[in-house]
Image (cartoon, rainbow, N blue to C red; front, top):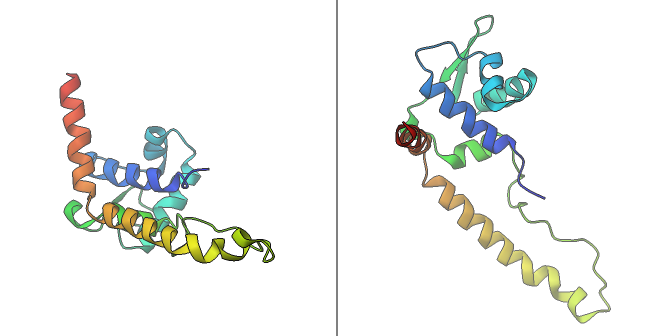
Length: 145
């Protein structure tokens, strides 16, 4: 099982909007880059819009970043696309056997560890911006040529 691909697609959309900011970034155009259906792009773009990360104008093809690249962190994208509910990245199985030593204590033992791991991941995502991602994409492209 992995984290929803909406997160990666959200990063893809924001990066493409920046790199193509002189052009028209319609959902069809973005969908071709992501290699998915434009409906998926519109849904995720709507989530990014609701989070204040993109501006979309009704009736006009295209979207644009609502904030500067350096102000949008991967944590912002992660939260915008509702990857997982707050403090639920790691699920704990319900109803372990209370008559068992492990079953009786496992939830209270691993829940704090899971919370700590999620907080560490979120802190890490908060330290990387879309600007960092775009710079790396452009650097990789320039190395190919």
